[in-house]
Length: 100
Image (cartoon, rainbow, N blue to C red; front, side, top):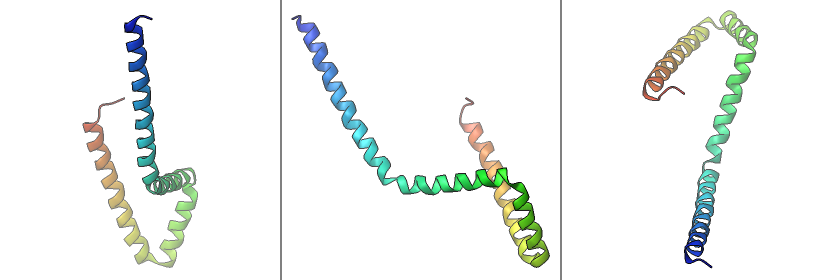
């Protein structure tokens, strides 16, 4: 056989083994971070639910306003602060990351 072909085949095999070892390392790293991904997925599904059911959120807000006005305004102030912070953060991230 041509020595160049043998050399290329060996290099290919070494690269395949190296890629397999890297895949194992990545999977181990992801397994240690899986609880965080689980929490993030629960938050994401909650946000998805809230966006698809705004009437429930409005009803809860009205019930809270009637039952406990101070608590309503306290939570409304916190919600507005979070909303405003997220909007600013989104603007900063969009200015840093290139558009897709």
